[in-house]
Image (cartoon, rainbow, N blue to C red; front, side, top):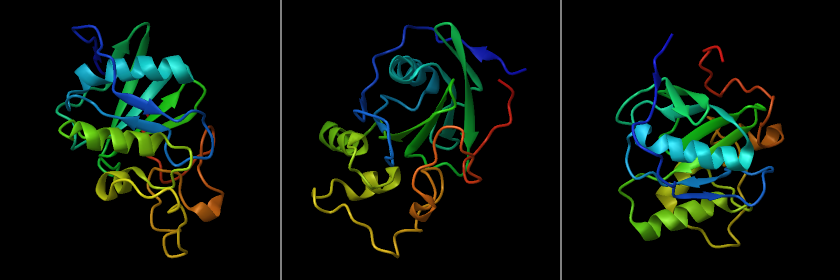
Length: 187
């Protein structure tokens, strides 16, 4: 059984912007960690997400972006499983709640300027946002009226942000998608 990491210090307050409501959005918000250290950064985020969405039981991250790879993290009375994936975009964090709801967050790199980070987090938390996490970081903000996609864009991104728009939009909750990474680690 993997060792459960207990953070040595109290969690910091996360720099986080969440969408006002959950719905059929591309992202549920944006998070700007202060470092790439998961032991320092994840506890505060987990507590904030727990307050909003209920218990967080699993977090999925890109294996190459972070400084270390812990498997289990104690946060308050809960233990959160951490999954590391080569195919998950570094700009995306996927959290799974105790009710199997999926919370998708833009991850703004720690070295980003405050102005750019605030813009990116606001775009990710905007309920009208149609851009995926890596697109927000690479293209910056778009005008309010630029929310349509062309038919050639409709199938451009499958990965971990809900699949094809033609399949009815975002897959959440108990809906399984073969494109989402799963760890197979028992709860």
